[in-house]
Amino acid sequence: MPAISMDQHTAEAVAGHLGPAAIRFTHNDGAVPVLDPDVRDSMAIVTGFGPTNAPTAGTLSVMLGAVELQRQLHAPMTVIISDLGAWNSRNVAWSTLVQVRDQMFAFLIALGLDRDATDLRSHLDHANLVRAGRIARYLSRADFQEHRESLLELYADHGLLGSEIGVVTDSLYTVADVLGPFDHGAKHVLMVSGMEEAYFTDLARLVLERQANARELGLGWTGNIGALYFRVLEGLAGYPKMSKSIPASSIHLNMSPHEVAERVMRDDQTSQPAVLSAIELASGWDATSAAAAREAFAHREAQPGPWHEIRAEFCATFNRYATLWKQSAS
Image (cartoon, rainbow, N blue to C red):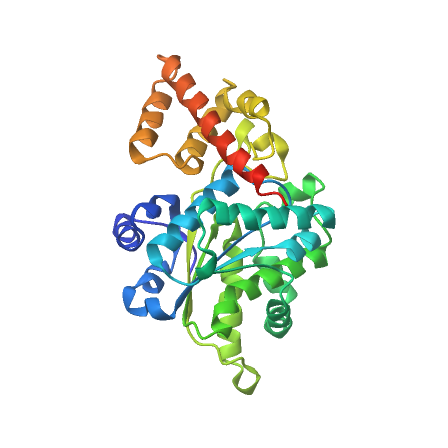
């Protein structure tokens, strides 16, 4: 089934399972049955991050969401830093991918991810590489053409993509990530990611269905995949999302306090909604503080002072995360 915006009934069901973390998700694709407490013992969570650069506010929001989700569900979680996938699909030096990968490992732990309850790994994982090789037989070139990243053309226009085969290889590794828990006996997998990555869920379901119908050529996997998609953090300067690959669209954790302030405190109207979204999703502020930010944003033209103060406070918060990020470097 396609990912859809959550209606009130679905949103309430998701909130009943996720608590406060539910506000981070806008779209659902078969997630409610996977979240049912009756199947919790056979459920696993999968998410991941690309190590092409320091986390943007958008990536930070997903990292904070993953930590909240783990605390709420108490379920096994796999978190993948996709070094080999990024090597194939993006034009970034291997040395950079390795450095950012290792820093992300340390940063996630510093944010509160429970290392003992998490399979925190990269694509340099023998089991996943074998799994990718085993599932390739169930997918065709047409499948990858039909199910692909929505922003692929935008990245191509900016000269950021690797080869066509490299992009397919990256997708294959990530589909293998989603299916990994089935290799370890799980019956229900919850995929959590950004909406632009929904195609991984579609491809993983194709594999699950086709191997089940392949009789002696199947893998013996049974179960289902549900997905929840994080609210998109729109980009600065009118870009559709904050992307580490498009510098003008984002703030990131390698920036100096001056650089962060230069973008967050700028008064251009195209950036203001993105700043509010960053405050709501990537600040870690409580509900009262987030509500105050929304109020100041709504009245910013008539009363610019409070919105200016809120943005300055967010700069200080973001810079604290930036300090933590820099301390995570080995």
